[in-house]
Image 1 (spheres, rainbow, N blue to C red):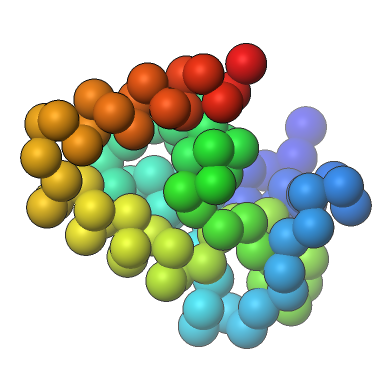
Image 2: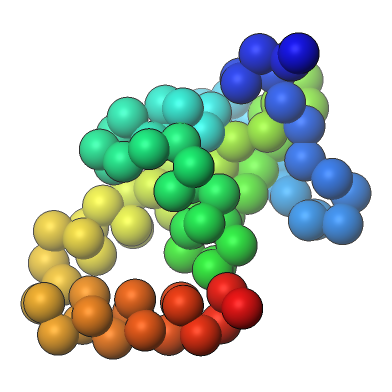
Length: 93
């Protein structure tokens, strides 16, 4: 089994390769957002986080997308959060 910070993305996902200072592993992104690692995958699938690989080819997300998600979570109204949940639920299926 591969360690969580050593996983790679499928070529179909089209993750961009970024430098280490612009990349976070999925577990670290989950920790910064205060959510489970599984939810990182959902946020990537719904387009809220940008998948990225570091120079070693390890899967993660861009720091800018994590910062944008954290800002949105801190400032969004309950109505905006409910609307996003509805859109993501419909779009996920």
